[in-house]
Length: 136
Image (cartoon, rainbow, N blue to C red):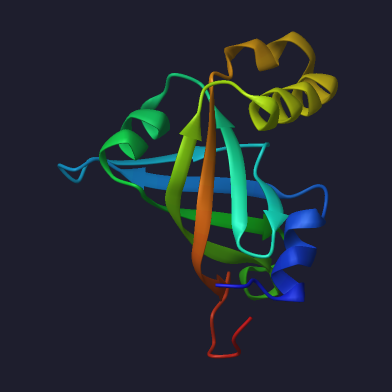
């Protein structure tokens, strides 16, 4: 799937809230906030992870949903999108891993040292954060 210019705009905005939802093969759900999701081309999102529930779930179940939100003054004024994702690869080293980790480290300092995995996702579907049939 190729994401729209609207979705690209949301993923380029700052500040924004990024919430990734995953589940294990057994259905145990997890939801977590992340600062590192990056749209790298028209259909690929990358995110850095530590040894956490999200990473464990993605090893078992490659499906995830990313909520990208710019809060408004009321629920109906909230802007953003939902991206339905599928893991393409998980990298633990290499040029893309090093580049993304260095960019995060430049923003957050030594806190980036916990990041051990670069997850590359295919974007399978997109929807508005408040979906009233308008598409995105």
